Image 1 (cartoon, rainbow, N blue to C red):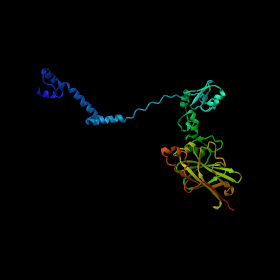
Image 2: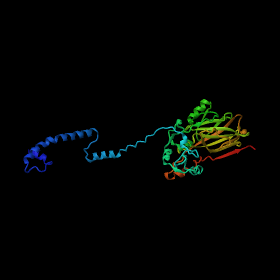
Image 3: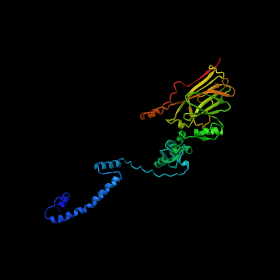
Image 4: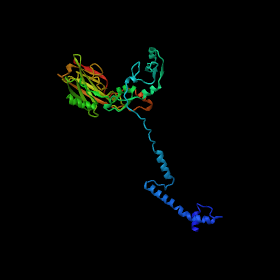
Length: 365
């Protein structure tokens, strides 16, 4: 009983007094009552050890658990439900200018829905008062359509009134075939296979930074050139420039939107034609930046853009021997965040040190 008195001292500070007998009887039950909680605590400790989380470190275990709870990222809010619908396009166009509606949208007493730009002129013509419709603002601002080039890889959905602008700069815009009357549409890589298989045109491969002499039959008005380093596709076009010369131009075949990307490479070219006898005093040369086009309007038109005018006396029969050098320019570094708007209007990267935009003609007297 003395041993039992010592065990009850921490939990029962008053062990003597009037009811000493009852306390002694209660003390005898204390070890039996507290035995099960101790077993549960030991089992819990074993379970924590099996799970590689221990609480033997006191506050360190609870701190680790707190850090785990704090570091857990909150679950993202669920996206609002959306549906696909079909509707008359006229409902999303201005009654006056027939362009897609943009907020703010107005409606006159006659039921005509107009954009903010046409509001004044329509009011004078219709003679009815109009009111702003915030409900229609919400509709035209939330109505989205897939990109027109979804079949070519673009998975974006655009607000309807901004879809036309995106279409003009979409990097997934397909490229056309330079052959007149051909209905091919596809990315530049597919254009290579198409020109080789369907039109039996050889694919000329060149490396950047060195001149290559190409023998181009005059009967074929376009020729495909590929950069070996990055598989960029170029088109060399030939066209009659009057009766005394042939215009030669070079451009990169790619969508306008792809060319405008910050990571898109820029190119510089140098074209030169010498006299067939090798007399360097009789030559023409041009150096300029390489433009880009998806060829949606066909090959370049003679006299437009940069081209090299080659007199017929510098040609050998029905073949044009021309030296072509293409340099790949490194894209400019990204501008600081504070000057993004200014950098967006910056000119194209400078040409390589050895080049300049010029056309030189040397003729034998």
